Image (cartoon, rainbow, N blue to C red; front, side):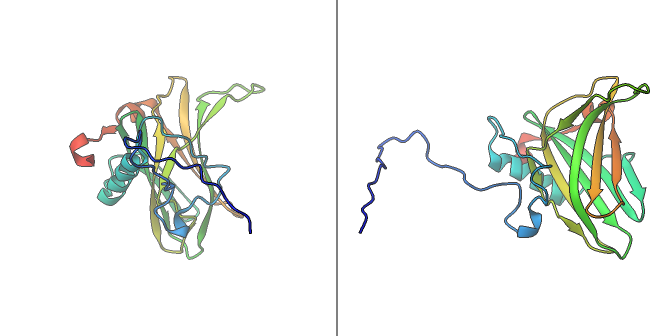
Length: 200
């Protein structure tokens, strides 16, 4: 029988009392995990606690307010809306809604956010920068027929240069009902500030 040696040590005054191991990309349900982990890459949160980020996303989701009324896309029976942009402690939170007006389920392949040039001359290389979410709340991989789903994405804070715009693209798996939202810098700088008292 093989023996295992233990390298654990007891400390009277440990440096850390708690270690958070939960992955906050989903809320524990298998349906809320990203469908394509290569497209939605989760980055570290720096000094921010994953618990606080998750609490903010949950609060935005549950309040379900439509702060933005001019950014949306509707094609092939699918409506994709940006309901709100929020900011807190160095992060931006995007609240989106996808409504399937058809009877055919909409399977999400991936969501891509990228900064692109507003005007690109012919034969010019397109300059684009992909923005990577750090967390996602309630990211469902399928919107059933005649159903609606909402998601909150957390991103590191950024602004958009005058000659660029943010494109948010929603792609359908094995389909062509893709959606596209265009976000300008004015929308970012008008992000609603989240009050500390409502979070903690």
